Image (cartoon, rainbow, N blue to C red; front, side, top):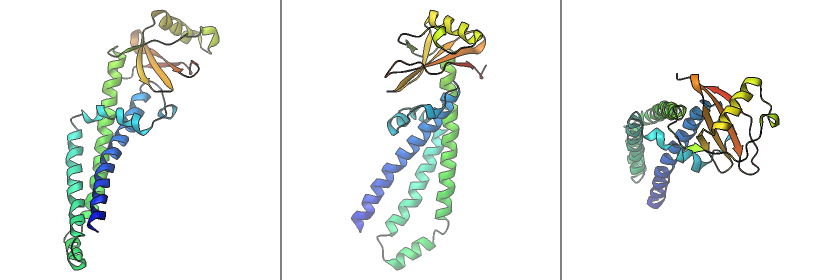
Length: 213
């Protein structure tokens, strides 16, 4: 029984960081990509990608609150596990002394994920603002097609030609399947291009506006 409890404790301590990391990464990516009119459903968000993009969330000051809540949750859960090593009578007495443990855990979980959500959205806005300012890596696309090969409006075609001539695209996100880049123009206007790696096909071109201006 002691070994079972020990294994459960180890699994619990492993699942919590992974869950927090994955949740943080997904929320961050959703808000971040939305700044460039890209849906998160266009990206294959696996566990590895979500964890990589969860790091900006942890640098946020508000994440300290999440860490405190996590410590409190582990403390309240570890107590009943320790109590499980005792006799049934002692276990009932231990749980009776903590009738609000479940409620506290539920409230703690809700508060923790709420704070993570705030941290993720804040970090996403900060990083997207840096890209709009050109404080990001440049990206070069392979064999961009002419405006005749794309379904573009008059204004969008003019912007596209200007961006291709300048070749000034800043990397938004790059995955094993696709790369997205942003071309920044005056007045907070921009053009987003995505290119698939497997065949070099250009995804629908999007005109975007910097909403933080």
